[in-house]
Image (cartoon, rainbow, N blue to C red):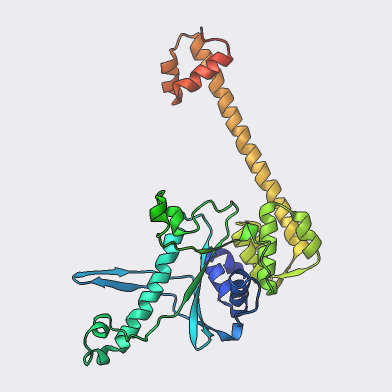
Length: 326
């Protein structure tokens, strides 16, 4: 288990969501408002490589794109493609990125369809020959969810329209927007998760972001949490102590022990911040003493600023405070 500390966060999250029961629960909660529409046994792993070649007459370009987790599920007489994208940081072009992933998925299916019709095309003419598709051919829907694990509120765009310059009403009314399904862990209270693992990860991570240790203790006080889940929570909240604690245990972690580690981690961070602030204050006090001494010796403000590598305004402010500036 200790090796988990060296595994990248995105790999940990991919492995977590690769489990069909968790994947299905996320989509049921987010896309289907808690209704149990997707069943784990109906989900099948798909290739995450969305790379493809875009061709327009004499123009050709390869696009390499890989998704985090992709599943396929039977839906009626066809199927739907479902994808998850994980974000630790705010991405200010995420709607465009998600749209491109989905478009590449459609392009990939289209190219596979055209390839399967290759022999038929030899005997076709007109419209079907031009596209490589039959009139009745249809692509399958792609639905994507973006999970944002950051501590800050998402302040980026949630749709393509948010990335576009302000449009006149006449243009805005006909503009084709592309909205993304965004889930923020820190504000996930409203989702109804049925899967215990998903609920545990979201709830504990959410309350850790809020610093509400009492709420976690009240619900999970004497609970044993699987080390896998503790690692995921530690990676999401960027808590080295939780990840380390999970690596020290074989199967489960007692939540009381975890909370004690977290409180200690907070105290250590507080002490480090205090030491850093103390060093900064000491440095600034030394600067004040130098400015006072050099000013008394007749050094110009410009020269003092150059010696300290500080703006002249900074030096003047301290001189004013010391009532030295004439």
